[in-house]
Length: 314
Image (cartoon, rainbow, N blue to C red; front, side):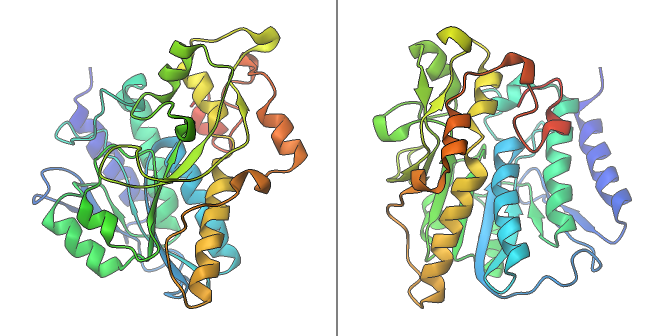
């Protein structure tokens, strides 16, 4: 069996091989993780204008959130500016990311490497610096002061976010959670197991403000209903198959949230968003797609990351 440290070194070597100009530094102050700085030739046209957004996320959920915000910056670089990516480091045995309580425990180290490598590659290629260490550290506090985010979007992250981070951004910090928090369902690291246990027929994706207690901040908005049953109404115990279905609304909802934050910012009144009608962002066709039964034969094809997800569902 390959040593977990070998996967970590392989990931770093692949990142450096892709572009030797990248700066990759260990974080001894944190106990694990690295600082990764893009090479000068990676997205040299990236500006320092627009609403400053920090993305904290990993895995497919974090990647979808990052893609949504990246698309907005690509369209209007004067309006949105991704200043950093903070992501899980499941390959480092010293990392405290609740690995055994969350989605990472469904994957071996090779597949964990694929997911971590992909989100880091996408961020660095877009000119975004990355951090994979402990966020409750003096080092990250100094990095936060350097990046100066005005808004933070969290999606699929394995560390607890404490009060100094929560209080920092003027426009708020928001978490994407694949459960119907408005009705008190699925808080915590096992939202799909909750659906299986309740034999639920539908669920919703939630965006909520972050508080120190996990998944307990005020709900900003939810998706339309999402069917989590198979054809003829049968339940499935395949939590990864359910998870893939619940991720379908992520990009639409995160994009609308950030557009709303940008509108406030452009009007000179940067503030937190307390409530949004995110359901109205979805067309009739999109709503119909969310309510179709889950088809196990389409495993790994419902999301933009299908090439990564092949054989693993989510």
